[in-house]
Length: 255
Image (cartoon, rainbow, N blue to C red; front, side):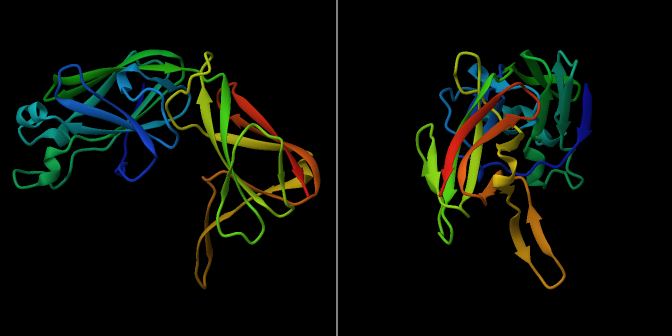
């Protein structure tokens, strides 16, 4: 198992859905936020995606606040089994003390596993088990795509419903969210990294997402998946999981 300290940002403002569960000892609440809607909202009953880092936020129940005695930021996590597992968590607050409200907050953590199966995450405080939760991971077998298109000069993206083929104008912008599916077709929980290809390849170009422009530079980010249609005709866009054998293809007519 690999571990490293990280700083995790709050997740409350992200995503449209989430799965949550209390630990087995009833002291901690674990949450994973999702950008797509889930069929299962109990984190302990969900199947999570292998091969990609998943970021969890953690809170205390009333019993947990009482038992932590103001030292929740000193919680450390271990995972069993730990083969092929990468675990990261934020470290204790340097300013922690009796008057520091952050000392009452347990650290969040991120977890990435390479193999499907059940993994127990144990939270330890002062060397003792404070709480634990078992999470199930599975390998996605296919992808469902949530698609949006913005026609040239339009101010808003419109959702593309159905499986296609779709008709768009040359110069339109396409954005997509890949949703991982298990072998039974059920949605798995967790973010994935994806790659895009097109046939013919010269019919599209990846979009650079401009975040800010100043006199010295243009600041861009490439995390959001997006492309422009630059050539009229028939084409197919394929989105693939960068780690797992899961993909989805959709056809377009560009006018």
